[in-house]
Length: 113
Length: 115
Image 1: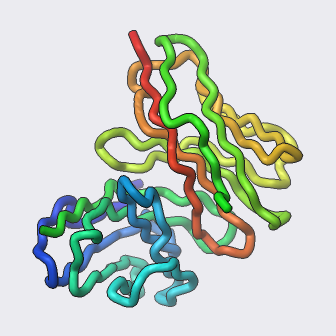
Image 2: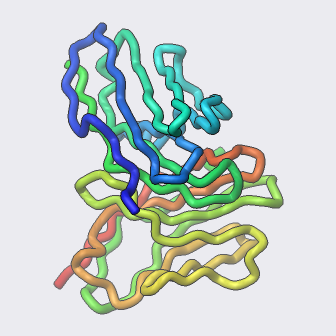
């Protein structure tokens, strides 16, 4: 069974631009979560989607948004990029919202110049 | 307050020896799950092992075992017979029963296995 896939793997943007990252979960998984990883803040939860609905949201500004499609694929969008948005963005999928293990994708490395 | 604390920023171990990575947690939930993930320099988070708060026995997965001491709120990872490929960052994480799938991570421990 294929793992979680994320595209693109690397991205360079400039301040003020917007970016969209994509995540395809493991087949059959319906829950998708997003995390931001930076050297200074570590791993921080962004949001979680299940059945096309946002179920949980971390403490990030409204510039960070996401959505989930009917096939469970998810996208996250960051508008008006700031230098501090440079990070590794990790997507994780699990079968449901219950006590299930989350499996992570390889991440998207975003550099904002 | 930190929910997950990993007090060892870096650890060194000789190949074929065992190593213990420490993790303490803080929660008021009765139902929670504890996880360990490995992150090589490539960036991908690799799931290693899971322990549920109601599990009476310590979890084991191959060379990985989780030393779960509920009263002390600790969930240490034990890696037996270390291999060079075990060199990576290791993260302890917790999911609280009321938080859906949301994971809270510790700051990580960088493990280096020496030949």
